[in-house]
Image (cartoon, rainbow, N blue to C red; front, side):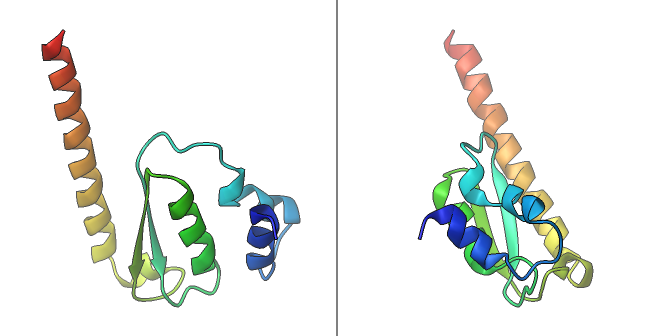
Length: 106
């Protein structure tokens, strides 16, 4: 089964238009330029874990964390938001250091 078909099958339980579901498919993305963090609730009944895993497997810059809870796990576990912001700050600091090294090498 092609990945797009698999993605659509995985999200087939969602309500809404098929076009909206299709747009969310990781297989439609050609690249992810910036680091992207997905935290996936292990009991999520809205976004299938397999869809998030396929997205993370396809792109080097996509990082996947499995966390307790369901779809709105950030509402019940606000520490996840802080953890994600800390992760983003670390990524930004690494990018700034790399840019500074490139500038000093010129």
